[in-house]
Length: 259
Image 1 (spheres, rainbow, N blue to C red):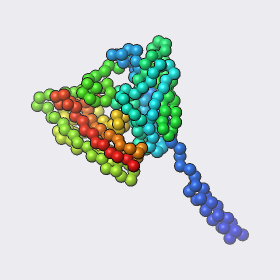
Image 2: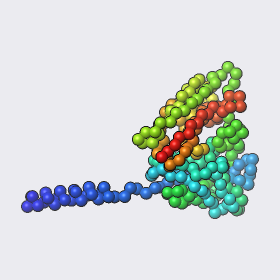
Image 3: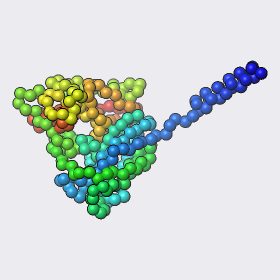
Image 4: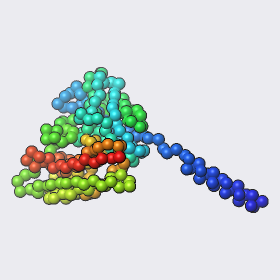
């Protein structure tokens, strides 16, 4: 009897292993959070929408967007599909590519929310509601070729003048990004604090889409959709302004090819 039970258990284990091996991989999935909509002070009839996107699956691409309460929804930069690395978090952000809504129906009253739909190549259409917040004032970042509507910090005479270069190395898990900087110190303990010349953090972008902040000289991003991609890093102050020397922002980019 024990032999029979043992044989049945063995067959059960084999069958279970076979089921695991044949079980399909999880489908693509994008989770949206922290969606807000802000009127732009320079264009009061236009809303800027910011939202965090968490990709819990394979590489994907944000193809387009729509909003039922707006006549037009488009990205702030004239981009094609926006790539999202596998197992990553990215955002439509004020200091990167964001979503703009034109021709809003109704009044912009406190507490109003706006239905937003983002269309992804693999994950399909994902919806959320963006909550109306205070108007955003545009800074000078875009005037100097930087992404978004952020502000700048011009390096003064006698202050450290940061310089930057970046590298990208393909690894088994995706890509390793290295940041080489001079006259600059990453200071995560000072973030959100007052400006201290020569200190701060970095912002990393993939084709203009903000992947997040950098608080050290190395970071990793997941696998990417096939094709050519631009990775850019920009240095910022503790109070989130982009470093600028003269009229040149402290930024560097590199192009990579994903198979």
